[in-house]
Image (cartoon, rainbow, N blue to C red; front, side):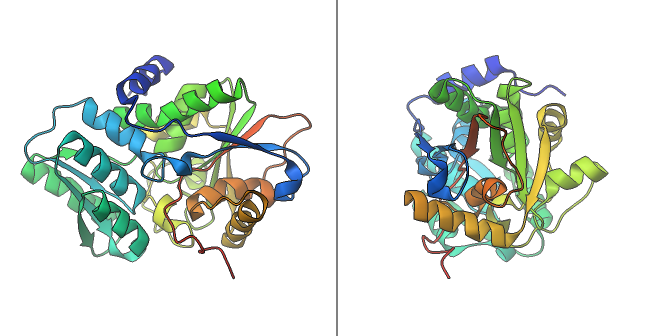
Length: 312
């Protein structure tokens, strides 16, 4: 199996240009976040649908013929909102399957607001994925996978391309990981030129567990970040690029995620969702300690959450 090259990501960037935002970066002095060093934040949570997912959604739909049945996806929220928005913008119908056990009302509302028909499913995340796949098979609708296809990975990789152009060079990027689509795209762009670090919670640790046990398992994600990072396992293509190009898999606990979100708010007046705070928590908890002078970027991947979710 072959995953996207930087040339493929260049092509994806050209394909989706004008349909997604070039989100800003923010250089933050360490003291604002309670850190001994400065850090650059990539504000991808300000993307048009509130997360990076819209990059892969547009690239998928613009790379294929969309049938009359429209498009279908499975999602905890961000991917569904992205697919619904991209489909509506391109004149297609969309149906989004969502596991009831991790569904958050604010994310369901976002999907519906962007024009998606939401189907809540019972059982596990894996059960939801099976229902969505069956619907695609039965109806012929275009399946827009959340993390494990070539166009999805290439689309998500455009955020790394953008970061490098904005920063003019970096040493390390910290990325929250769910099914592996974002970090897979980031790693496909940077390859061995930048240290790519995965960050997960102990209850959503698909990548860390894959490094230890191999990727053949079905996880049952839980905890504060489950709605955005709760994939049942890494994608096959995602795993291929990750095992070759991701340098480390770090874990943080839920308390550290809340603390990172509070520091982000206190120091910058920015609010991210739990999945975004996970990457920052690697620094604020001490799970990752940069070397002197190391140029570090934290990718704030999404902002689709109740604005006060992290407050006491």
